[in-house]
Amino acid sequence: MQLLSIKYILATFLIFVRVSSMIMTAPFFNSASFPRRVKIYFAIITSLLLSFVIPGEQVLIPEESGLPFLATAIFLEALVGVALGLVGQLVFAGIDMAGRLISLKITLSFAQIVNTMTQQKTDIVGNLFTMLAVLVFLLIDGDKVYINALARSFEVIPVNQAQVQLAGPFMLEVANYLFIVGVQIAAPFLIVLFLLDLSLAIFARVMPQANIMFIAIPIKLGLGFTLLTFVMPYLPDAFETLFQRLFDFMAEVIGVIA
Image (tube, rainbow, N blue to C red):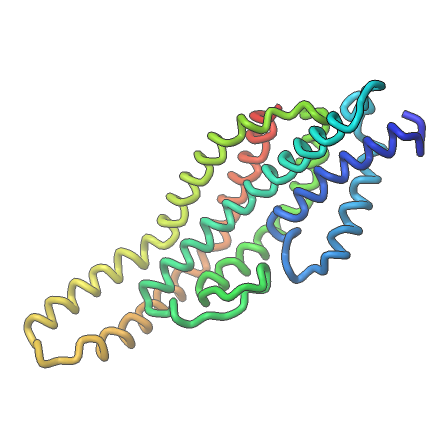
């Protein structure tokens, strides 16, 4: 494909659509801490670099292509990028859900702080888990794995030939799995605090004159922090295992769409 020809420009633009869609939805890359201009520049540079290494037949633009072909190709490429990004977002959503469940059980759900990833208010434990997950994600080179998966997607899924509709059921399976993972991460807190609630309920029946709410809140808070102290050293290993599964999910979703 001749450099700076119409076909090359269109092919690079379609690559840019897939790349930018993934960057806007993938974890870490879509962080609100990065200005939009930085994301756009990064997407442009990545697209230009990929245009030199992707086989020409994978981004082949037909001679008779017109506006309908271009519109369809842009739509499909955007959906492919979003599908790749959402797989990672579902993993982080499962981790955040575990933090929200824990905050709810230890009476910290009312304490809201700004999440540096999304610039939205969230609970303390959920924000802590998200920050730790991002550090683990970068520690195991998750950003590089994402870029490699993006480059591989062009080798497996040619431009305008993605079967995006097949990714729907797979995404539901991933979301179901990550809901279970989120509950499993929060399970120690849920079980211990359920037993505490049961004990406090019995205590309230034995001593009805006691102000059980005044007693329960500091006990739950102290017990929650104690459990966090014991659980935190094991969370990086748990998150690393979860991210390894994420990379498998990415390979599977590329295979499904192809």
